[in-house]
Length: 155
Image (tube, rainbow, N blue to C red; front, side):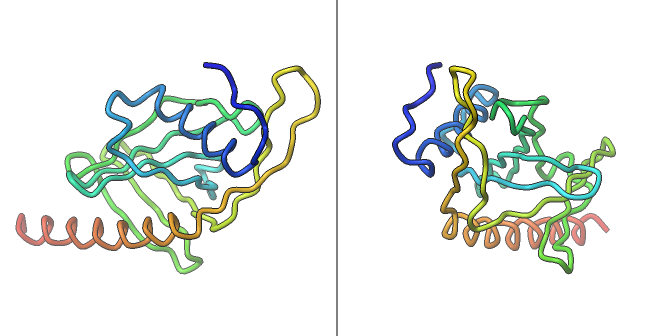
């Protein structure tokens, strides 16, 4: 897929996130996307897709130099989630039954590099995801509530 021209860094970065995510997920249109910065053992840039019905997260690690997927995307839903937590520093931690743990922040204005296709220096830009970050926080609250209910029904 050809890279979009750099007219607006916000628009260009969002297109790059979609390109990396959409290339791995067949029903990509079902998900809202946010850029995430990983912390702890899951450091690095990620694009996270989320949807409410059925409640699911797709975590797609990215190579920050190329803005392409650096690893296979991982689906987290009620069939494989081990835990979801809001950490005191405002980050989230999500674990799967296979032992993978992701800790990440959803910044309102992440600053990222837009790779240049011609080998020249990358252009620095930022994404305005204030509303998306707030929507993601609402989703995570709902996701945690749903998981608590399912856990209490199986006890």
